[in-house]
Image (cartoon, rainbow, N blue to C red):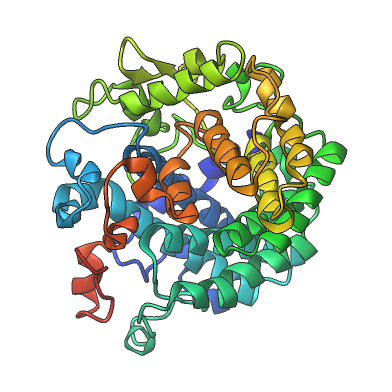
Length: 452
């Protein structure tokens, strides 16, 4: 899965020379006038590349905002205080602005390809990337501006409607249709090279249905992913130590990073998220939240043995994460892997078919392969009601996917923020602040999230 990293090198130098600060401007310069383009592959590659500027912030938000990791130095401690302090300049510059700006740059690149390319595969890859980008935006920021046309000229910018659109509208009008089109139009030929594929589009569409509470459609789509995985050779790694390596057999989609190419957020190191979890940043030298240690210990106590994932995910004595300590400076951001799909499928089945508890054993047996790899016994028989099965699945998600950027977003999605965080947190702070630069640049057309 390294081919796309080679592609990055072809245009990165040009992109860096022509980079723009305005999110309605797009790099490289080749993209600026769609009407003059005849080759859209570089524009499509730009849409992939801009995802690299999102990897570190998204991973940090997913685990440090929740009860897995902690910030220990001001102002970064504001990520754990759930109030207006999170909107401060340092946090915005390090985390929120790179996510916001790079996702819109990816969207503008994708729009260009969708509207102008005559290559059906390019168009469907672009729809996958646009749908994925808007999904990340609503997951992180809530209501967002929707732009579905290529980059406007300077004279056209005042006519672009940047009013933030309701989350439901963004899902129904953009994210779901784009992923449906990608599902219908892509094959799985891109799976081995790190590009968008049909199985990746199905997996994210299933995840989107989960976020919308549409569990019946989620179960149907995720079942297709599991069936396709068998055909495509996507399998669980026998050893948990290998699940987040770049050559993991579980990978369905990853944003590929390289130490030889600067990220789209301007950082020179490829996998800066590795340093955050490992305590290599002075802002959090011992970032491990004791509650994650307790979760692994509880998993061991209830599972008939030691949960092997603990030692491969955290260093409890050292107070840090070790999931990404394989010595690989090119660690990719694995956005979708097979274990995630298995766990989502179990949850979707439980929500859509298990109201009476009659399907509990059938659902839980689907987690046996994950549990066996972790050195634990089956969950069959330990939970019989729908509510208890859901609790078991969520506990399994926490330890299986720890430090992969899921935890906070899972808590928000399942409505369990207060219960799991042990405090009452205003729903205003389930999402993150819009960068103030965007509000200023649009004269207030783009508004701030309530509470910030």
